[in-house]
Length: 591
Image 1: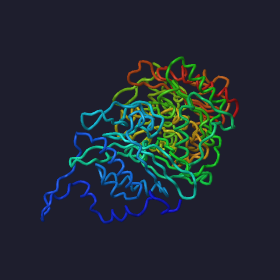
Image 2 (image 1 turned 30 degrees about the horizontal axis):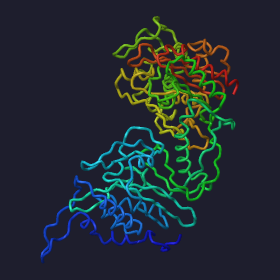
Image 3 (image 1 turned 180 degrees about the horizontal axis):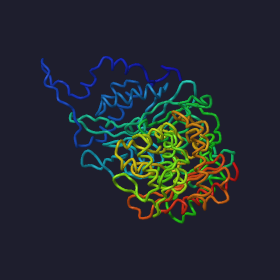
Image 4 (image 1 turned 180 degrees about the vertical axis):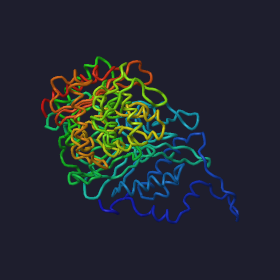
């Protein structure tokens, strides 16, 4: 509808009055009590006594008439917080941009009606005074059907309803919704609308914004990389979050804009993981397309079974395609709660010796360099191995195959500069680069140990303050296999962070040599038996506070597949995590 076509059209009145200023004084103070000189003005405040039914009806009617007419200054002056009301009403006018706005009083409302509009349970009655007038919309901790509903306090005072209708240029669609506001009594015996964001719309909460935005097509059925329907216990609960984050990331890249429609949306900029609340569609987006993930349905089934086979233990597993960084499978045990495959924050134990080996190789140590394996390490707080005997004639490769703690600690203290592991983790393996996988993720931490030899020692064997998850360890292994970091993603079109540099082909070849030897003749040989062609592996066990048995870790690659798994309290790497990784390798065949 064109501007000026009917009563209730938003006009430029508010802009002129705001520019003139002064409405705030009117709204906050009483008038003169007569005489030639004005008396001292008294500030208006909300009183405990509720308004009469007539006052509540009049307060709601006057406010709605002023808002609908576009007189935002007057509307704001009829509230108990003119400044906040002016900001919100102006934002609604400028960001929603209706061509016409009709607001009709609907009389007294009930807490149940407001609760229904917000998707929250109806709260107990509450007023500024001692009457039974309701205060719906306060946070209850209960479930909500709306991303915004129930997020903030709703109307206070006598609850009144209204009917809202907004029209928009270029379409004959109209947006109808039920609104709610609370009316309180002021100290000058006049009614005022108690201001809350929910006056604009019941779903709107503090910190959120409402406006017309592009509407990307709603995601269709979730399918895997081969267009096979995907219904996974570990993935399905995360799909709404995944869809919201992917839509946001792709919108930032200006991809598929021609598919978008437009609509009125509530968003929360402070919560990057929240899904936008679509209130009204002005122009339809194109029909939904299948929501295609990088997941391989067959490998996902194997990953889910591997976690189920843990027999109730907590754990997680991730499989990555090294050539692309695309996530082929991930699963959690239990399937509910934390997505520990992506968000876990655990010491990875000896699987981190891949990183330590990278730094040592880049420092000039070779796989055949003699690196003794003593009983105890040389740092002040002596650290033992998981086996009792020393191996004084070991090489670096043999230490890697046996997972000798003391050799890696002592050689690291001798050959690596302070901070070398932190730098290598970031520059070669992309650790700490704020990955955008499509889901919330903890992107791992290898903090700078400085000159603290005990902390350096712990970090070199994946303990201390190092924190990882299977996503990070699988990515490290994938980088070794391909020679280049590819940031993990769950949707192929997502942007991928680039590491500052690649490891040299020489270092990558030596790492693959050491991991292959571990798979055929080291600590991983039993798990990797029969699947060792074009493959490599590393075992790990990690101590953790409050757990008597060590956490089990295992990572491996075979062909264009890299996998990592952890099992809480699972013991040695080959005891629990290893069989889970091997199950996926066998399911994949020769990729």
